[in-house]
Length: 333
Image 1 (tube, rainbow, N blue to C red):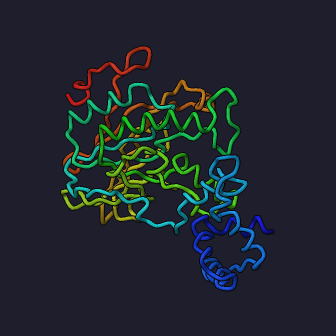
Image 2 (image 1 turned 30 degrees about the vertical axis):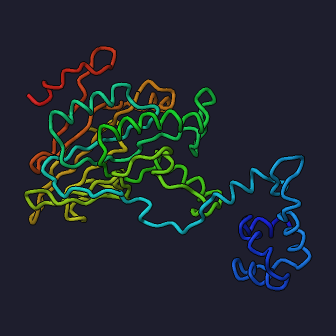
Image 3 (image 1 turned 180 degrees about the vertical axis):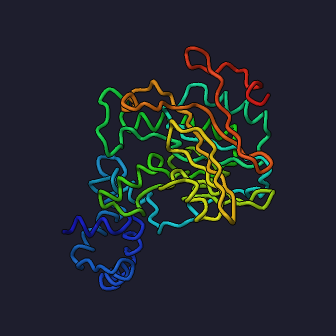
């Protein structure tokens, strides 16, 4: 019980009681956390931080669990906020040329993803970039059985970060959709009963050394196109996409369905809308997608765009080995 109470207070807070009487020290700590240690327990803690007890075996001493306590002291407990998901730099409102990046599932992304997207960027000069989510795979964190021959969660994340850093160097401004794979860490902690206050933001997880200030995350992104129509981007819409669009009074664009790369139009007596399915940018041969061998529809590699309010499919030109040919020009011919 004493150990559990001790975990509620930082070293600095205990040190702040050294100049106080026992009664005032107990009141000070009680006001901080709503839990009052006994005077005897406070006296014991204080002795650990008195100058004459500040060293043990010639080394700085701050208790018996130095590493754990340092981690606790360094941890910033805060209520989750939408600001955690917002970009730190301004986002343009220009929707003239929107590039849409579908599921990448890093580190199991197509090996030519960056090269392909760099060429697409040069070809269309996007004014806005939307990422439909599943930017990372999180195979080791999956609720399904993980392949024991694939990387552990830490190694997988390290490799995914390399790709994310490259992607951010090409697209410093990006709006990302929440997704079933991208949010696996949050889903796992929810299932385990871990408060969200203990979990880092997407930006802190993916950019541990800083960066990603122009990236933002949201459930969906609704933009108004130059012709006045709206389009809603979401990782996955449930139900018939065109009917969803009519309900939202908008066109819709999604990822999630790796084998669906299409644009369908629907007309009612009052409106016409389109639904665009954006394929994916995965490495279909990666072991993480072994389950796909069971499906008839195979992944279609490419991305999509909305140019002058019109939806556009941009398949990746590939050779017989599934590698990007580098000849993007033919796609726009």
